[in-house]
Length: 169
Image (cartoon, rainbow, N blue to C red):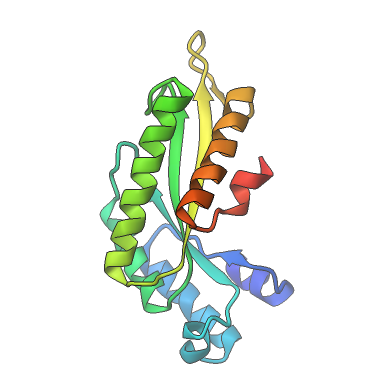
């Protein structure tokens, strides 16, 4: 329902998010209708892009791989996402977490290129820091700003587009 409302009311880029492969098929059909044909989507005339989430340490669920295959069938750009919590599912240090995030992102991007060579991908991360005293999760702190800046520099070094999420934090 929400994708339909977005497609009816905006021309901005939209993430095609779904919790199931079956739902994603319906969403891709909606994109086809808006674009006029699958051929137009394959030519890059679409608002949609996909997302694949990595579970640290470098685990890609089967459902995400199924969805990546569908995104690749439509040649939709994919945001390869690392959802890392410093001190939770990664080392607490910035350097240690960046090393893990970079390995996860590059490994998954390589997998996406194996699925379809030339598939457009984004270097993307959604970061948080665990407070070691209370175990509370912090989504905005100085360490994260440094980590996001470093991720942007890594994306530039690899010449992989960086998702705006990294730049917006």
